[in-house]
Image: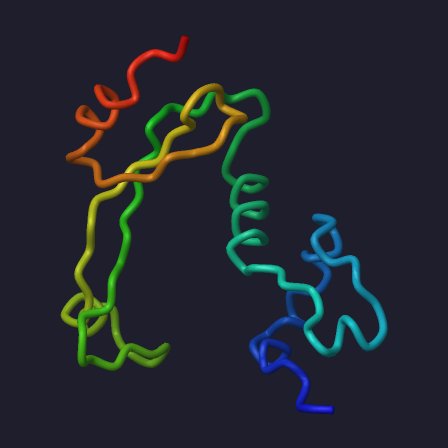
Length: 126
């Protein structure tokens, strides 16, 4: 039958109420225990962050800046490293994200330095 999904050992029980409150957890019984739901922690993080940090009705300004952290080849990076060690073991890329059309359309993510080029290539829809 196999072992239960290891994700259950990563603090899932501690956040179960949040998963349910945001409607992201709908499984029960053995499906829930064996990891049948392929929920991504980034989904929960996004919901909670938006709920706690955005004001209702507040306009979002685009593009949204963020930093992509990439682990360097040949180095170990685990939860026990300090911030300074993480800086030494990673490369960081300034990124941006914005909707391709309206705020509810698909989003495009890109290196910040390429925004003007992408806007030119995208052009106007007819």
